[in-house]
Image (tube, rainbow, N blue to C red; front, side, top):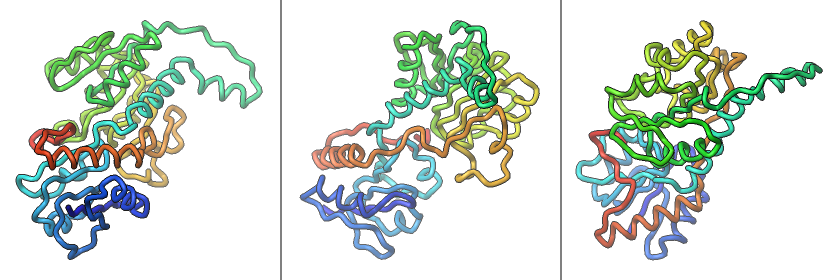
Length: 306
């Protein structure tokens, strides 16, 4: 069995020996132009040349949950694309989102500013019932986030393309219920895959549907959010703030208005990092399943884009 690995920004020096150890029956090598044909490719943001040259692949594995970069390429016909379905990312995402929601709800940023200025301040406690949290996207990560937020007694709404039933979550589904979902939420957490349908979804019209004093947490992709519309709604006061981990251009360009905005908290795309050991074990298990002719989790539907 021949396996190739390529990543635009991950550490091949660790991934290749890790995959080799997990797949002792295989020969694992770093892809280079003109490399011999392989049975499987394990990739992150590969060049089109890799896909054009590798004409005998049985499956293409994406070392992340988001496959939007792959969907921009001309994929080999008939080759299944398989993404990671967790690999330690869901607990990280739940930690991040719960921290962002609670930090906003408890007004910790205001306390930090006051203490930094030498001011001993008090804010009236707020009711969780006034801060329903809407989780936009109920995949593996979204479901874990929704369950985690609900443990802090916030009302939780969930939206998905098709109906899903989760204990403790008020569910909405389909385009016809999207604005109803937004109107029922004050804190919005975006966990959608990036597709043609979801790009620029969070524009002025939809963000304005959030309850007054709304708050946005984007941990999906920067292209979901229309930057200028977010800034305008922060200026008008309809939105109280945002926590952003993803951006249209990464790293976020110097001089971008997000950098110094007093109502925006920024982090450098770190809400849920790929954990190498867990990811390698999952990919090795899926390769073994494909070899046995079994169906595997994380199979990407090219028509939906995720």
